[in-house]
Image (cartoon, helix red, strand yellow):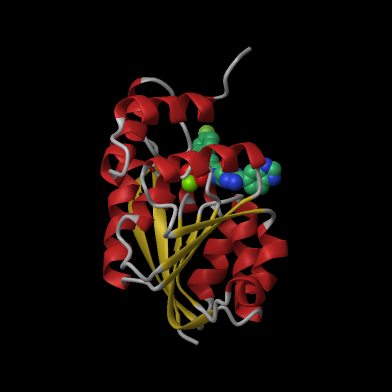
Length: 214
Ligand SMILES: O=C(NCCc1nnc(-c2ccc3[nH]cnc3c2)[nH]1)c1cc(-c2ccc(F)cc2)cc(O)c1O
Ligand SMILES: [Mg+2]
């Protein structure tokens, strides 16, 4: 029977990447997506911007919304200090099953907690379920029409502190117009746009980095 694209991506990781070597996992996925099949990972170009933000923030607590196959999960987790915690939320059980195996191949399962379910359901439970006070960094990469409601929900749930960083993928393509409008006009955020390209293409896209001012 026919395999899915995430399954073929995982096979490429298991074939071409070294167990326990996150950079080789990232490289194997990027090669698969460039040479074989496009897939909606943040990719190598935007991935470098993501890496620089993670390194600059050096977060103890990270929330990723939208795991997909775990590409950005591996990029982020590989840069975290030993006691840091990354919680990644994935709604789609098929994506989650692949992501768990990609994260395990990279040897990062101890740094990552993959939670299956809808962001709207889980964000209000973060404190009680995971003992999280606030997130130092949030990477938004899930449904594009959930960026704004979930940001407002994180504010309401007290999950953001003065200096928390939101980094949002795809603010141009597919685009998150309501989120951009809100975050760029709100006095509670200071935003910066990092112009780039849609993963593995020449189409414009970018990341929006926003600091919560409290
Ligand atoms: O949709 C995206 N990302 C979201 C992944 C996800 N991760 N989790 C879910 C989820 C969430 C609740 C769900 N409910 C049921 N399935 C679900 C799946 N969706 C996405 C799309 C593109 C893209 C650009 C141009 C195109 F021509 C086509 C596509 C590029 C990107 O970088 C993306 O991140
Ligand atoms: Mg994306």
